[in-house]
Image (cartoon, rainbow, N blue to C red; front, side, top):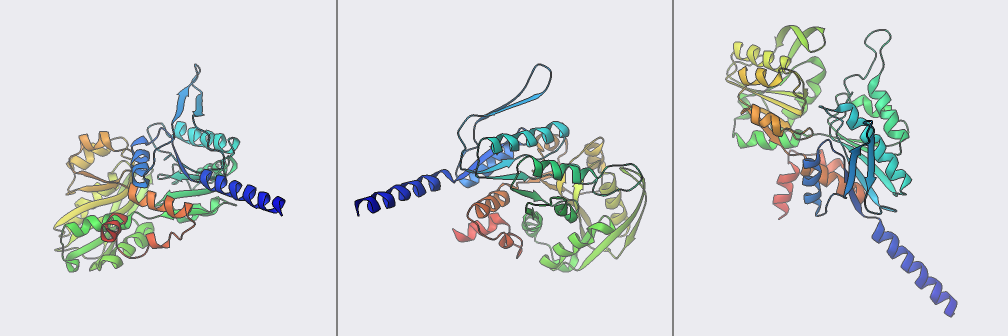
Length: 350
């Protein structure tokens, strides 16, 4: 009888210890430390201290300071410029470090998934780079991947044996659109290419926009658009060009001019990921765009100083809510339904 009591007490203590260890632990790589800190603040915790440095020959060295054995670890690391390849390698090394450190579950939180635009073979003797990155992330020990607005939804299929959650930033943008107090009858959602029509239509349906317009473009070489043709009517409309990525900004700036030429009153640029490479900032400053809205999936501090039109919306509330739901085994579908941003929903709860 005493043995049975001792055994029950012993296993009870073990369960309590396991539960105390299995808690959210945030690891943030060097790609976007500000976003990591924001997410930690939303969750009421702190980013785990660690060292990311270089050896004398330039190799990356990593050490996580605290014990993370048995923890539910989320690694926050967008694979973005300016050092995209370093950020990829850093993410892979962080994943392996956590695996070797006996973390119970490892989730790679990749707000911006680099190499996503290389998702298929467009010509002979070229790699499918997005598939290669997915394979490496999976091989290095991730149990799950959390991304935001993948350039191509099919990339989720490149991860063969682990689940991928693709979040959408559209509700965060819709909340900002509502601040403008525009009549939906005079709003047109614009897709800058045929591939983005679904995205534009989804946003239009949520806010009740009058129309969805498409721009057909012909691109001869990467990042250079030769011609554009508008499909739809925008006369007297306020237009929102909806895209997932703005890179050199050539497409969105030409699209804004085209829309204005066809009678649009105002044109806003909306994109989840502001890559802004090359002449992007100069083009945006000189463009017909009223404002450009992007998220902080990629750090934008320097770009904000260069472009007064640039407005940055934080992804921290959305990512923090997703992390909390994953940890507590709750559905993420609530984050996609309705038109409320996470920020709005929390205000209503209070």
